Length: 277
Image 1 (tube, rainbow, N blue to C red):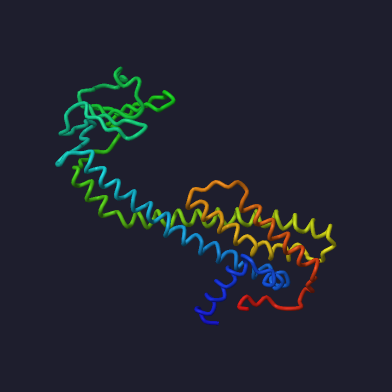
Image 2: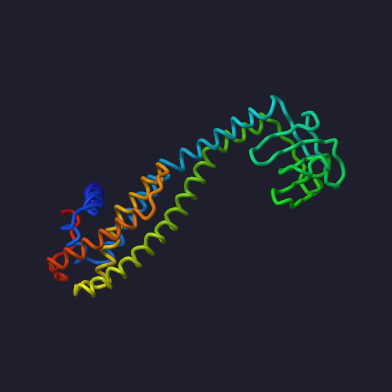
């Protein structure tokens, strides 16, 4: 089978997994391995879509905001340096930067390691002549001598140039890491849901005197989770909060398969799982 044919077969399986009970008759006489390969491919595709529609635009926006923020916060030719444990800048003493919930203050007239009184009621950091004073929102304080830090010097233009130079590598790394985490964690959550719901379906099947095995219910579950997962994804995109919507849809699919099996019992091995039809 060519790659194009495999792709058509896969997308057809995705579509039919969302509504077609006749399709599920072939699923439950197929193998768990085939259903698992489908579920992995489906979630991998969903992760790629998530990366391109959510993570990539977010990373690009963050890099743009960072570059623009440097230009907005700092005047042209601003410079900063640490040399032999001493901080120096061409900005006037007491320059403050509002970073939302925290503040950054640069005041090279503050010397020594005693926490400045005027910074008592603030959350953020103060860079003095020879120390960095940090105060957290819970009141905890830290004092870091600049002698513990390596010497360096940087200008506003150099910072902007660095952000521009590392923009795409950072965006690429962020994209890969976030997608890897989402794929692995999301697939584990999906598999856990399928295992639990398939066990419940098996118990229901015993009550209804169905002959489906746990393996068959797992195969069904790995396909039935398709529409609930898509619902969760779409709701997430639009920040919609509908508690248990995907869970209810998942359970309804499993119940529908149970009712179909009760009215038209399948015989294991009567047909192969051919998702192309």
